Length: 437
Ligand SMILES: Cc1ncc(COP(=O)(O)O)c(C=O)c1O
Image (cartoon, rainbow, N blue to C red; front, top):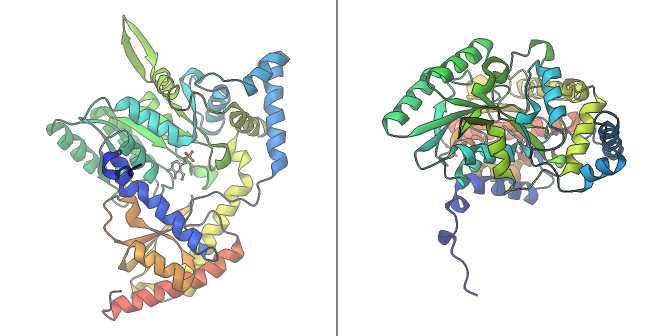
């Protein structure tokens, strides 16, 4: 048969956002001996196969003892096609109450295949026609721009302004869009230790954001997978806690549980007027869409995550006590290690931010960072990182790179920093000498 033409397939397939992930994986595969500060994967040294069995049994016991199911009902829940909105919705709601002091109706929870599916369903529902656009803080997580591309929903960037979100710019972008006949349907934001910037909104900014969202009639799409990985005693409230159902919560257990389960959720308690004087939660509409995407989220995977929640008293803060400490240790190792290896960083024009939580650190350099430079870093220095331009989506090289500290052990971090410092010094000195490589 004649080859199909890419130009005849969906436009998203030629989009740089979708190609970016493939390129980054491909470089990592080509240089397996490189130390990689690239992937935002959670720490894997604590993964234990026995835990999977244990959590599954805990969830089975919960079905029988707490939910009052008989043996056949519990078996059916695990083995059969299931409730489209999921089977751990009550546990999701109890976890939000336990860790965040947030009350949500379990009926407004849709358990999804990762936060990624929650994003796709939410954007699919919100995008009614070509006028509908999403606003998102730039730089932005590629998962949301990719999902938006799949449903053909343009994403209008809002400036980060150095503090996680420039509210004046948010108002300006929303109003400009309306003047042009567009309908901003929501603002996507990661309020704690964002991917990729590491930025967090302080309490004042959170309150102001909710006020502006009310004023401009915007939904807020809150995605917060890294929130727990900071100092637990100082966590400001979530946007959901401040804004109630002005906020659609996009949840992920990929970092607080484990990504192999592929479990996430949406809390969508916004009323939808379906006519005849009836309203239903937006979650029911997302569920309708989900029934034609993944039918239902695998109950076996839900059971393992549900059991994990139950095994830790419904608290992910408790479940992640060791991980929180590892990520703090790793961040400090990178901050201290960079400072020790680059005492002349300021003169070289090299600097980095110091997020107090999460997985990511952004390094600013005096030279443009493109994919070819990543390739050289891998080949010549055996160290990998992520060019920040991937999170802006226009492909223009920027003088920033992202380091992820989540996956590496202390020994790998030290070895990796030796290589990274050599790479940074070489290219910063070349830039200063006017080489501009
Ligand atoms: C901002 C953000 N949202 C969500 C996710 C996780 O999504 P999922 O639950 O689909 O793995 C990630 C993972 O990299 C992320 O960085």
